Image (cartoon, each protein chain N blue to C red):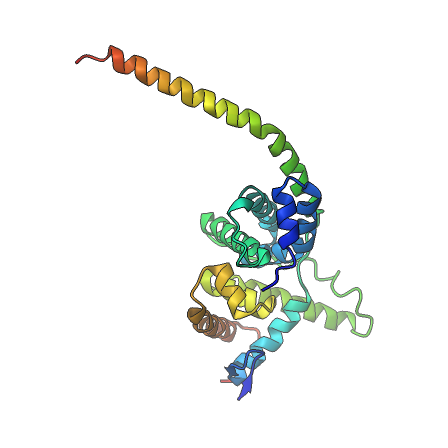
Amino acid sequence: MHDPDRALVERTLAGDLVAFETLVERHQGVAYRIAARIAGPDEAEDIAQDAFLRAFHRLSRFRAEGSFRAWLLQIVHNTALNVRAGRRSEPHEEVESLVEAGVDEPERTPAERLEDRERRERLDSKVRMLQPAHRAVLVLRDLEGMSYEEIATVTETPLGSVKGRLHRARRELIQILRENTYDWGLPK
Amino acid sequence: MNRDTEGDALSPAELRLLHHLQVLRADAPEPTVELSAAVLGSVRWQRELRPYLVASGGLAAGLAAAAAVVLGAGAPR
């Protein structure tokens, strides 16, 4: 499998920081999103930065048979889970300013935009209620659209277990949403 | 019964859930700072500091080894 990051990794190992900067720019979006969705937005920037620094210092240990992206996201995933595990309890997500919602959606009425925004934030907080292993696999598959193979690498889980874990994660989230007072319209 | 992108069968509840998650997927969180600038800044100073850290680590190890020899020699037999 051709890894589009391979040449940049080799240049970084040879001391070229511009190459590493390109790697960071290429993957900072997905690294941040995964950190935010696993550990919460407050710590996502720190987690993403920490993961990139770890990746830089461990780059000589990166094995070329896998993709750099999957290897990096494995570090992000582990760092985010460690941060989350270090907390005593999961803070409740506060519903942010709902008024600023949906500025770029002129076809929606303010009330509809408010409702959309509230629903997204409710769902986001419910995803964060999933147990860590379930949350990670659901974020990687259903929010990031990763393949099962990549999820297996990122979570260091056997490929055969990924599907089962994803199924259980979806079932857990459905159960959480059914117990919520908000009607999510989930059929039995 | 519907199927997802890799051909797995999905129940009606799972399909509805994926519809909700699609909305969340479209509303992806983004960093407020330029991560690459922050990361590269840290990489640069850590790289400059590294030789000194390695040297001081080596010095500390040498001192510890010397202390062990001295203490070992002075210890009662």
